[in-house]
Every structure is written in structure tokens, then in C-alpha cells.
Image (cartoon, rainbow, N blue to C red; front, side):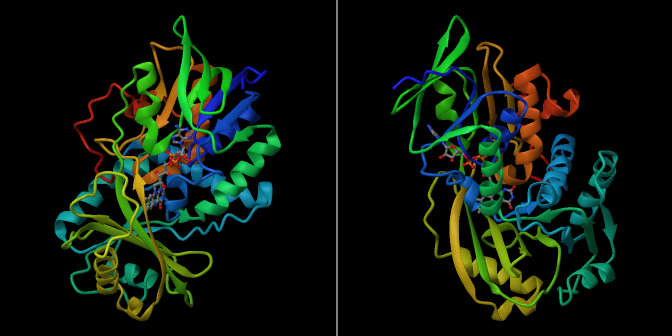
Length: 386
Ligand SMILES: Cc1cc2nc3c(=O)[nH]c(=O)nc-3n(C[C@H](O)[C@H](O)[C@H](O)COP(=O)(O)OP(=O)(O)OC[C@H]3O[C@@H](n4cnc5c(N)ncnc54)[C@H](O)[C@@H]3O)c2cc1C
């Protein structure tokens, strides 16, 4: 089947970035088609995210983009009516070593200079925010009260509902197999079911992004690695901030958890060593390691019952930063890939940049700041707060 329409934009992937781009693209007047191999939106890595949303980064582009995302998440219910499960609980990094204290304090100037509301707080204030937190060796921590959390499932449903209302089309159960290029310009997208003529294509294929670059000779250094998460039964409210515990312990680099709008504790672990690949089977090691770590930090969690665990992938880049831009060689080919462990929080803010790139060749975010997302950057230097 060949579509009779020539779309302005075809998006490969209805995920954390593809869906908000569809919304803003269609709203800006670009006729937009989203293709996904799965049966509905958000069935890739999007549904595996635990819902943390922070502008607390060390990279200026991420700070600014996530500040815009937070505006979208926090204002959505008033504007569009959907409950996203948004809670402005803040982010707290409790700190237990001088080395970590120095590192996090060293980031504050740059974070504040880009508009982030963050500060160092002492141990008393940390304990007030999280009653019962481990006090031994507690130096204090950084606290950014305007960060928050929301339900990735509710967000995908709401964003795609509004994208459709604006006129964007979605086609599911359709795998993109090729991209057509004539005289150095994108002319269409080929799937296992048909062909769709278009002027622009966006590679938003998450963990499969490299496969959608190779047909046009573009190498995208995205290598997924597996991460596990879980959710408990609901309990009385225990604390508000999302807590990031950066203490390295056997089997893990860090863990983070928060209490969602349904009062469940949602948690995630960064395994050590990392687990390269796309294995989505839960491991026997995850729950023992993560629960030990969480209970050590907050002993009152010890009697909580876990309802469910799952495993998904970070579409990882060598430096922990996304890769976003437009091909110089092939007009009309764009990519928003390698969103690592932050695609959900970056989604709405970054979508504005992507649509602007497609329409005008420039992002919304200051161009100089946005350079940290370039494909031709030096990937050797990792972000401090990745
Ligand atoms: C355990 C865990 C916890 C996480 N927690 C958070 C968090 O708290 N906050 C946060 O911001 N991020 C979090 N993340 C990261 C987040 O989930 C990802 O960064 C994000 O979902 C990536 O978005 P994406 O749009 O690039 O990919 P996806 O959401 O995976 O979307 C890509 C889409 O492309 C489709 N696709 C791929 N290839 C093709 C093809 N050939 N044809 C058609 N369709 C195709 C896929 O089916 C998929 O739907 C977490 C991840 C994990 C695993």
C-alpha cells in the first residue's frame, strides 16, 4: 500500500519522545504520521520508566529542557484536563561522604545559573523532608523542590490523545524497514505494510535507533543496557521528594525511589556492573540488592510488600547525553535518540526543540547550549550527574 498523502513528517516510534513531538509538530501545522511496530503508543521503553522528572542535571541543555518539561507536566491538567499523576515533590540527593558533598556542591553554581531552583541543605532539613532517614554520617544533601514525578502510562495516553485531536495520525503494528532518499533528500518511509511519502523523517526509535540510521549511512552510537524497577503496595504518605541514593554498594551504583500519587513506592536501581543488551527478564539479584539499599537508607520501608517488578532498557550513549539533530548529508532526516535514563522527563521540552529544528533548522533552546547533543561531539567525557 502506498499512502496518497505526502506527510510533512513521519515519526519512527510512538515513545517518550515520538509522542510529544507528534503533538507539537501537528499543532505547528506539520501533517504528521507516527509509525510504531508495537500495538499501541508507549510500549517500548516509555512504559518501563518509573516517572521521575527532574531539572537537576549538570548539563545546561538538560537543565533548561527539563525546566520546560516540568512546565508542561505541571500545567497539563489545568490546560487539557487529564490527570497525569503529577506531584511536585522535589528531588533529594542525601549525601554521606565528603567526596560526594564536594561533587554535588560543585555543581550548584552552574545549575542555578541556568534557572534551577536548588540548594544544599543540612542534615536536619534532610531528616525533616524524609522522616526516619539514616542519620549516621549524613552530611546533608541537595534539594530541588520544583522537580517531581508523574505516571508515564498516563502521560503517554494523554499526550497521544491530544496529538490525535490536533490531527496527527498513528499507525501501529507496522515496522519501519527503510527510508527512501532521492537526490540527497528524504522522500518517504517504507514499512512491512506499505510506503509513506514524506518531506521529513524523525528517528525516535529508542533502543532500535541505530537500525533506523544505518539504511541512510548514519551511525548513531546508542547501545541499550537493562535496568530493573518495581512498585510496592500503597501506604500512608511517608515522604514527598524523589530520593536519589548515590552511595555505591555491592551490585549497584545508585538507586532512586519516590512515593507516587497513588501512595505506592516506585523504585529503580543502576546495576554495577551495567547489563549491556536488551534483556527484559527480571533477575534474582534485583530485589535483594535494591531492598537492602532502600531499607538501609530508610528503615521504615522494611515491612512494605512489593507488588510487581519489571525490566527495561536505557537507550544509552557513551557519555550519557542524548543525540539530537538533523543530518547535513540527507535533507529531511532528523534524530532524537539516545535519551538514556531520562527520556520521559526530557520528552515534552525536547519535543519543542525537535519541532523547531525541523521547521527552522534551529532549536528553541539556545543553540550554543544545545551543542552538547550534537552527533559529531567528543563522546569521551561523561556527564557528572548522568
Ligand atoms: C527501569 C527504568 C526506569 C526509568 N525511569 C525513568 C525515569 O524515572 N525518568 C525518565 O525520564 N526516564 C526513565 N527511564 C528512561 C526512559 O524510559 C527512556 O529514556 C525513554 O523511554 C526513551 O524514550 P524513546 O522515545 O527514545 O524510546 P521508546 O520510548 O522506547 O520509544 C521508541 C519506540 O520506537 C518503536 N520502534 C523501534 N523501532 C521501530 C521500527 N523499526 N519501526 C516502528 N517502530 C519502531 C518502539 O516500538 C518504541 O515504541 C527509565 C528506564 C528504565 C528501563
